[in-house]
Length: 246
Image (cartoon, rainbow, N blue to C red; front, side):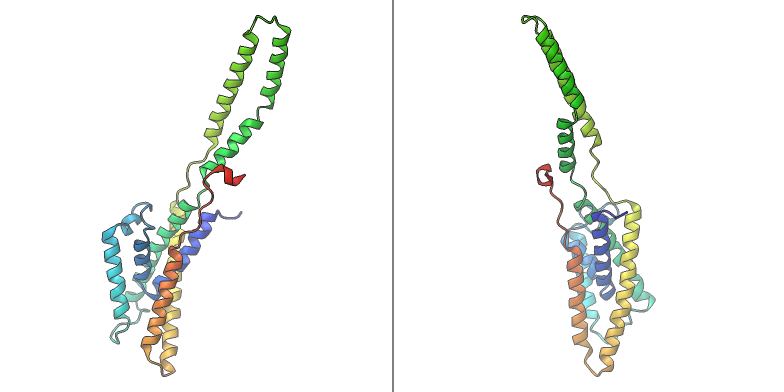
């Protein structure tokens, strides 16, 4: 069974922001806070929403970009370097997965239009009963309008019951469950670890070739920013009206 579009997009975004956090631990959360993707996230993921979160995460990210260029900075592969990357990468991944599920939730307008269409076609039996009542009306005296009125009332009640049934069938807007959030967090954390090891290995090989370290560090900064920006790019939502579906 194929996963819904929101789940697939959420896990892809989780991997991208996790990789960004693996390169620079503060980049992922800073990108999420600046983009405002945490404003509709469930608690406690909404801690990354608001001006204080933006100021704090951006300040931490800028400080990390500067500290990464200093020779005294410890390796990212130590526990002190990996743990923040896993935690912050998983946090940012869960926020973006929740945002993707909300944006790509099936629009209620499309289901409502489908229900209305079924309502107009479904009452075949009511059409037959209407014709039968019309026959009975034709057979009655011209002065008596009780048959026509009864058929009209029955048609109205049928339409009302059809509309209420259609409204009952409309699903509630999708919301991210704990399983999805945990899965996205795990994907983001795993991607952070993989990116941390890959970046450290690439920087080591660059230095062994006799090159200065700072150009490689700047390139890694740009790669982390690009990954975070791609992760925070919101997917295109489906049409919100039933007209587009038809």
